[in-house]
Image (tube, rainbow, N blue to C red; front, side, top):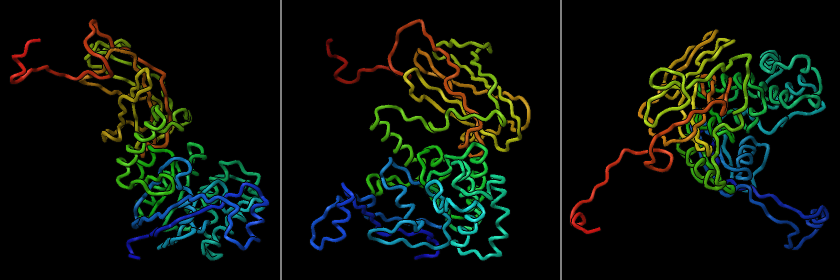
Length: 408
């Protein structure tokens, strides 16, 4: 394997035997004939891919598509039925909740056990112990059995262990979704630090927004096979279109995070719609320019703060979403009350009622600091009936050639 390749998955398949009854499992262990008392379920089918050093790859797909199975095989907590995986470097894995922890051991004992498995010496473990404790921030629970931990404590300790064993490859399976907002911010900072250091990151997530913003590439899996791989933004958009078609309803980006807010960091104080005359007005004339102004208060300095505004129609169709990161527009990230204003030009939305979402995020535009969903609306009106649909297009009718002489 090339030194530039950190993970090489070659024709990996994984089959599970599914028995209808416990006694069928016992029969199978004794029977010498070819008779099968089980059904086969192939979680993976001839999966092959390579990941280069320094890449961040997201794996997406519906439940049961094989995402977690391939991560477990890469992390060597699961053995493939066929095929092989070559790893170039030390792997730290954060898989299902509490994976690798002995529930009877204390947090400290589990740290020692995990670090030992990763090949660290006693001196290295002692050196990292304080770093792990400080990152996990679970206080005296570090000396208590982990069976007493909440799900958040599990994740804190597991992530703290994973990042402090100096891994070359970090493997994450949805685990960060359990942590609170502050912990997610710490994790995102660490992930960005790993990316700058040229480490390889591979993670499974149902959060399409995170995959699109963090990853270089995305792998889309369907029924145990790789359906598509490519640029993260392109693959995520194709996946979202697919899911919309399948479910016949709009998938909202970041739908697990829309209601999250932490007023200790940031508060959205007011949302206003302003017409072309500069007046607060929730009724906008068709094709009139208008603005949305958001007052927000920062209670903590937040470097690289990102603000976003999205517009939905009454049928929950996602009309347009803009944020300051995409437009490379810095906003005030210091303590105090500030106002963010977005001017819309050449708006051709058809008459109707529209709803506003406002969100503020940390610098990667992934972890929400505050989000206001459908808390404000405006109407676009017109004195005439001139078209149907969602958006009006400037147009001109023409008849050309011989058809222009035709009698109607």
